[in-house]
Length: 504
Image 1: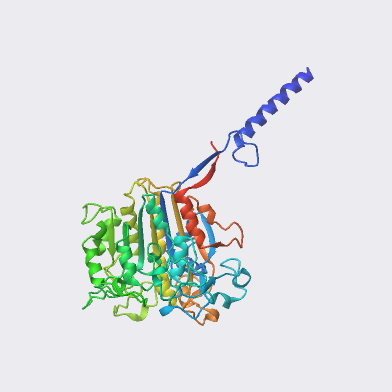
Image 2: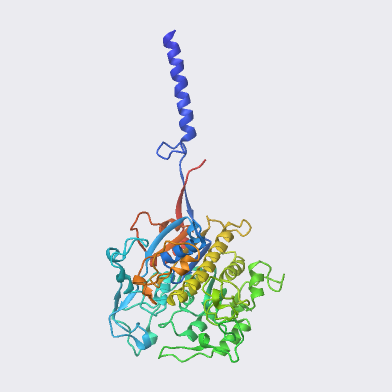
């Protein structure tokens, strides 16, 4: 009798144990699975790359401290990493008019023992990162093509011995992520807060030896297959958004390379206004806002599938303004000087671009640049830098909101969002204050002596979505390189990434 009772009790305990183990098998991954895990390949239908030009780790820290928040919008993305930005360095005497494609060159480098294993680490040799810094053309090319090139060059295939100086048209070029996206039938676009033909947006479509061949870059972009082009560089408006007495076609016509003549910038502009390549031309703030709201043009008109958006301003959306509002006493504050009222924000342009591009059934690639973060950092102007990085971070939020919108077909299973910098500018130093004290205590360069150039510092990566995990820093010192950004985007578009899923 006793043995039979003991057997029954033991059997009950065994059944209870199996039931509990089964219920918790997926809560504790070290236990045995009762269902076979499923391996699924995810591919990206939408790839959105946001570039904070000149935005180092301490720039983002300054933004967080100024806003006095626990996380900025970009820091809310799931994965965080950091990367090197070095280029190929000239070993010659210096190229034609500042170019280096014709000079002998070698691959640059970054030494963690001198510059630090993480971007937040106090640099062991602080002056080290002030040497060997890239520029936006070489850095943009690395992000766009996955290859290092020389300073000032856009997607040039480097030759260690350089190209013959008297044979500029023998130069070869790399394809970019835009080329690969278009080959798959995806829509493509570039958006920037600086002139549309500037180095970073140019890097994603243009192929030329010199970033200051603005006319050639403008021509290539205008006659490309880009569905959306948005930026500054309006020939009829100045830096305060006022009409000029005479138009200035500098960013449409000037070619500074000694081997190439200037373009007819006025003729190019007229072609854009008249809808060349099927792009609808917009330059009024309210038209950008209509597109951003998904209302089409003219308050409820059709939504164009292609757009050339040119803000009514010369160099930057806001950073270059100098408006006399009658009260200069608070100009040091963010927004203390009146903003230009007739230009859209980068956030608005971002939402407008997404609304246009999402119409393509094959998906899209778009690059969105906060270009004037760099301009303000060159000037060591914390106020303008904060204005620009706030707008950029708002553009990041606009992207995240778009991905989370259940009505447009996007989600984190078919979208890749990456936020990076092309390089750091200003050698900004860490602060331990918040609010307006960030402006008052700003410190640029070693010993707060100022630094008006780029640095070779590590820069942050924030990412989420398809293949984004590859950009995560898995441990302190897990340093990525800027060429890996292209590789992850290409992987996401072409082959996708495996994801392990445990069925419920």
